[in-house]
Image (cartoon, rainbow, N blue to C red; front, top):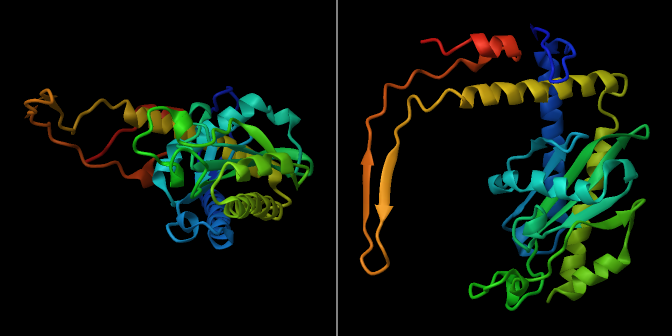
Length: 296
């Protein structure tokens, strides 16, 4: 079974999507992210990472769009794409080389909060950029006015810890010691910081190693299929979100001031919600997305 050909954003015809191949691609990318995650957890020293497993790993397309994030910390899903965009704004993809890696934690440059360090790097096949890999991990301490770098009494971000804009952390596979010493010196646990950063860097190396032997004879075809699959899935998602708010209830409320707090809400009755679409019948094409609707 194959999905019919469709038209991509650039107006070019997409190849037919073999559902088995797409599923193999999806699960293969997921397995890479899962292996990256396990490597970070097992290699780190911080209890936040090793015991709480507060870290995430993902893969991106060459354009910087997120392709896969393993099911680890869902809140990281909204942060990691922004972090890579900030890195690419500072270091264009054309200037990157195999073995390069970059780090960022500043919320004003795509980061989450300061203890969450995002480390990302490019992936190459036969000298051609095919995507990016990244990991985000919650480090125990990155400086600031209190241990653990999460002061409840902070009134400005400078009190929370070391702010790291997008900077190069490794070049040609060699860690830049100047940057590593700067990060370690601003932590109350410098040795732990070094180990956790190296664990995250190792996850990028494992992603590069695992991406190389996947379908060596069909690399170009696989990349084309992934490109159009992402484009069409995004279109179908937008189409489904544009179906207004039928089937959902809404509410209006107000909260009083601090001296007399109160809450009042009024809910309008929701119209009868149609049964969910059978996603197995959803065809990933623009014409199909416009014409097909939920069937009872």
